[in-house]
Image 1 (cartoon, rainbow, N blue to C red):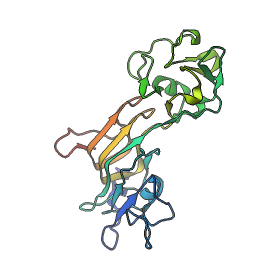
Image 2 (cartoon, one colour):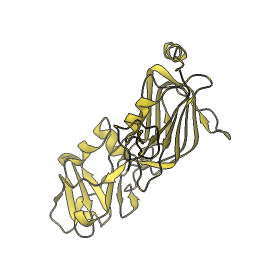
Image 3 (spheres, rainbow, N blue to C red):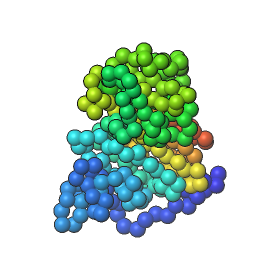
Length: 271
């Protein structure tokens, strides 16, 4: 009730609503974000963090669809939201947010047989709260194929195999060594391996001031360690419209605490 009351007291900004633009290729966080292209008056910003800081009730953020996915979590925290009749709209225009990056080779060493590599650093690089949470969700993407090794966060969890049994395109974890093993055909630096370093694609955390009157639409999240869209705290009139999430380590969309999902209709999912 307190967080909803705090959201209801949100002030209405003076002046007309603004359109802001973010572009992960040509953007600059020193720009004002008021134009999709660079010009004398400004241009798009580069990061979600900068873009979110600019938005006020009634504003719309437009994501440019570039040749690369956005490699950053869209984080929304306390104090963010619109007012009745003036929602904040985040329009992805079909852009993709990914949790995966090319494998960071630092810390991976050859492990005694051709194509077998080992790392004791990898688990610490994953964005999750505990090692157990990381191990129940982790996967690799090898040559464009997701490899879970038969393990799922809410389903089967077979025992990790011995490193000596791995075939190219497979991986395992040895608890007593706190080490991951990865088998590839040839050299690791030449293999096309990606890993889910980021936890979520879209993270909403509104514990003190409810997030209200927000629309997130036309957005794709893929290959994150945990949830595509993770919603925490208290929300009201939050609409997800025409969104997708796939190949995630846990859920596509996951509400927590007091957040509840209303039935989807032609408008989308409401919280």
